[in-house]
Amino acid sequence: MSNTSRISEEDGIVLEISRHLKAPRQRVFEAWSSLDALKQWFGPEGCVVAEGNVDFQVGGQYRLEVETPDSGRVAVSGAYTEIDPPKSIAFTWKWEHSEDEEMQVRIDLVEAGENETDLQLTQTNFPDRETAEHHTQGWGGSFDKLVPVAEGSTK
Amino acid sequence: MIGAESPLLTAAFSALADPSRRAIVERLGKGSATVGELAEPLDMSLPAVSKHLKVLERAGLLERRRSGRQHVISLDAEPMAAASEWIENYREFWEGSFDRLAEYLEKEDE
Image (tube, rainbow over all chains, first blue to last red):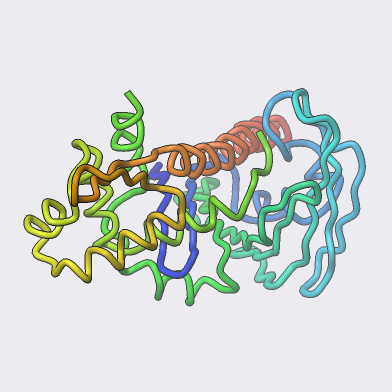
């Protein structure tokens, strides 16, 4: 499992998270493809998808209202920009209460042996992955490297 | 856990995307310095360093004070801490979701 965050040229943040799952790729794909399935797992422990709608097709919209323990009810919404079953899904992402700009999320599913799947999430505020990759060349290390610098200087 | 204040963050991310500016920030992490002290080890001209300092300053990453005829530059880590928190929030969000996804897939299996 390799989880990294990078900052890229021109305002870009790239967050990558991988997870090995003990389920066939088709099943992992289906976990993303309907409101009923998303309700079972979307959001960290303590969060519940209270309401939502999912129009799982390219150009279709989704909206999930999440009941959270510390921020009340918040909604995230966006549109599907790419769906390639059972390999990949890409969608835009915006917390409606937040001033953050719209992000892009991409899910890649790679078969990893029988009935096992590697899920790779890439989140960025670039319009597509190619652009993001093109622009991340300049970032030689992880953002984490700068954190000790930040913390050290406040003491 | 969700969302954040944005303009300062975006400016910080943008400013830190440049390797020369990261080198300046890393150097300032070891202590404050004059423009000249920054330029020499980084092998940059004074105007080049000044240009980078302006970008970092606009992003709220630097503090400047005068000492006689010189400017002493030091790091203001707050935007970097905010940027790092922002990334951490998303990381926690997804990691937490994927914990539940793994459970859901296993449960479904039975």
